[in-house]
Amino acid sequence: MPIRDFTDAGGVRWQVWATTPMRGDVRPQFASGWLAFECEAERRRLTPIPPEWADVADGELCVLLAQATAVTRGAEVALTSLGARGGDVAASPAPPPLGETVARVRAVMREVDETLRGDGVAV
Image 1 (cartoon, rainbow, N blue to C red):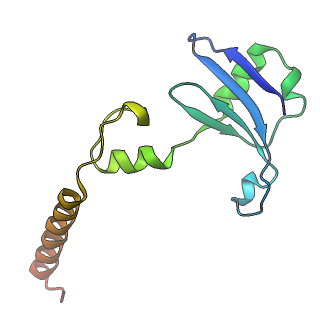
Image 2 (image 1 turned 60 degrees about the vertical axis):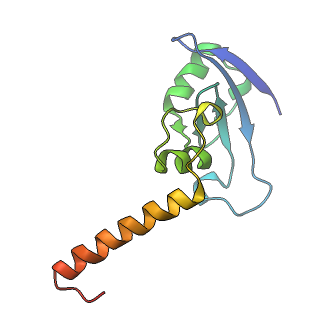
């Protein structure tokens, strides 16, 4: 599996490689594989894998990169939902303690119940 390094027009250094799933438990659009792009701050995916991608010029890799879809990492989603800021998981602050999170969830649930009761919905 070739891995290519290239720099985009903004000076960001990227790596790109083809990924083919070993198991069938992927979304149908990814069953035949994808081209994975990764830099320090971001990941992107392009499907289907373009033929001869490993031999194209860096400028063509930039075009493929622009066509690729950004990938949201699960940990980033979890931290963002807990109020963390920043795009890099390693640089993000730790999530609040579990007890604090549970208390916040319970408070929101109480507000929802009160709103529903106020609208005449049996809770």
